[in-house]
Image: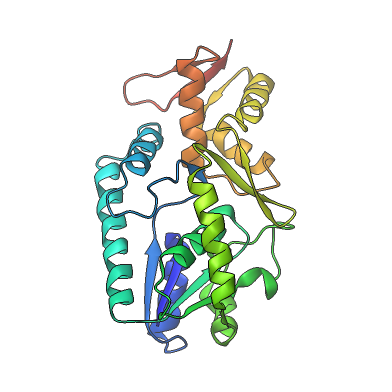
Length: 260
């Protein structure tokens, strides 16, 4: 069994279950967070659109992380090879997910790619666990001890279910470059700029504030969905380049934002 999950913390929890013999098989951490950016080539080993999207995100991250883009590409290519090897061996897959858009899109991508002879199972944590964020579930929110009882609760997807999910994946691949959220149980698309007003309102309240503080506060103000700091740092840079806010940087100093 190959256990697939999105995010390093979630993968670490499942790895701990493996080490403690509470889970059998291997764990794959899928590194490409699918809730934003283009998806047209997201199921390919060398996805030029996804690579370009992640390069624009990572160039804006604070503090700067050298060689992040190359490390991300290597990790993603390795994950694709692991999936291909599993399918060549007709190995069953179990996807662990909540209702985060990136996880639900990963389910649809796997349903579209997984050969018919390979079983595809799902562990949906939203059906079993309480959440500290009302209405929001992601596997990375939970410890290994909290996930352990769910190891026997995987559900096998039927072929009609997989076909329906695969069709939805195709629709999202054609939907273009956008942000995706789960609202009322359904995936919805929004413009890439959909959180800009949250950032600008927060900046207006301060007048001048560190970029990291503004991003952290904005993540907490966006209560209806999960938003990564990487994505919001990129939106800050986009707003600065558009002249909507002022980005002040100094040698060896963290960026400071000022309202215009």
